[in-house]
Length: 279
Image 1 (tube, rainbow, N blue to C red):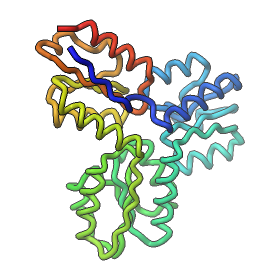
Image 2: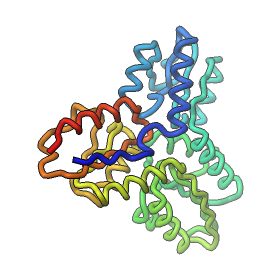
Image 3: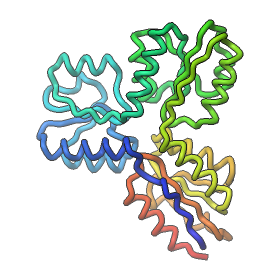
Image 4: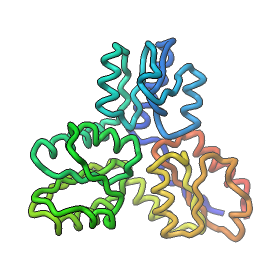
């Protein structure tokens, strides 16, 4: 049985940077927490908790000390509350996420009706919205939702960094019919695009696809959706122990990819376990 492992599988630049900052901060601070999970990997979050990094849900839960700002970013209001409490911050926000925040702010300032392509309840999306100074932002998940938007004179479009280019392009096509002027910033992270394209190519070849990463990870879930559209036998797993032997009956080629928040050691454990099911 041949195993095809995606070269891009695992940590992206922003996640690697965030985890490095978090572990370094944990070594230097005895009173430290993160506002929300630093990345969408329960296993990494658990490792950080063992080093003293407590996950809190609101700024009000932080009495004192140092707070790590997660890779997805936080809202402008939360940041203001942190400064008001004179807390020390370690900003692990992904630079690509900050760029989306800046573009959304710019579009609002220049009078565009802002359309944000993404998942409304995702922390990255909520953070982006907050930096538009309370201007109404339309969050759409796909072109179908975009068709319900009202006509505008000017529409500006940005995307959650882990969206697919196809989805952004389809939303932009719809918006072109709703406004005389449409401005689009392609804010999808390059690592996301590369990972998605590589997953497509592997899924076309494989008899079975494994997508490894947190069940709460948007980019991992999207990878699974992309692979499943090409290979029905696609399984999203978080850890190696979730892989079942009966999946591999008659399988000659196994494709493996992983989300941007998946640590290498989990990927290695998955590869090792798959090797036990040689036909």
